Length: 437
Image 1 (cartoon, one colour):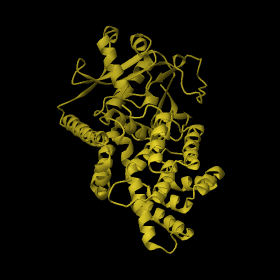
Image 2 (tube, helix red, strand yellow):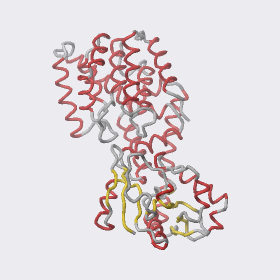
Image 3 (tube, helix red, strand yellow):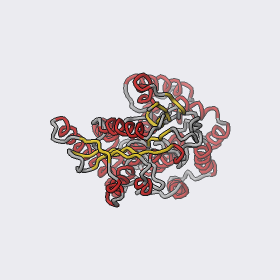
């Protein structure tokens, strides 16, 4: 469940906070509307299935304005103005090759966009301070990434009349940047319940081309790092957030940890052979059972949205021309924890960019993205289902199989299966490929 139903709602709430902070001048409002227009026009609006879309940018801006009364760092009106501008544009990287923004590209855009530069000037803001705040949101703030950001920050401080010879003020700006980076990391998880948080985690995994088995593991690591290493800043921020937002955040942390514990238990059971995963070819009697169909649909809905083939799902399961392999626990009658499903390529409407030379020749089967319940990824059940699926394709005399997979997975199959890329997609790197069967 999401707190903000649409962009207009969060825009209005941001303006309410701007009025409270006395920064609702025309140039600041125009800056907000210009940000929304830019993200939408560059394909990074609400429909972009990646973590760093317009929703994230506006949520960070909203929480930045909401949390300024925390008691870790004193935030004055001039600071709020700079934080507001930095929050609005901190992840805007329109030419991104991967979802995670490259801070250097963000800064280049801010410097080169004439309209934004004029708005910043009209608002009386120091662009070098905005750049420092954005650079401080570099994540993770360790190692080479941190060192590179710090070198650029030094240049920004030298370039600003306000900071050049004022070490104390430079430290203050760095503290503001620390505040912004913690807000950046908690805002989305405080502004919705666990279902929103899980969707964000799946968006992040899909856009960064992570294997599904890493979603929960990386989420737990993310929150542990945040709570353990950012304690000084996160405590005062959470303390002044509304109760429901604080509850959302901690409920999300505990839910991810609970799921991770379940994952470890499942992996241990498989390792000690207390649980065996059995790939199964289902009879048409079973496939017509409404309970069976509903089970598969629920597993499909756990996939990231771009990988869900939900149109006419029930009818496709009942269609004898559609190939289905399931993954069951311990026996061919056990609990279903995954499935592989597909059929003739001509029965699918894929992404418009795809031009498959075999379309219309009735010689290709399309394998939908394999779906496995959370906790059972990474246990080889998916590859066993896929192998059984290919065997069924051979029996139906298909010559080719196409599907989507992570780029590194397809690369690994080039030698083993003579896989070939048909169409590559950035930034998600979830590509369309073909093999002979």
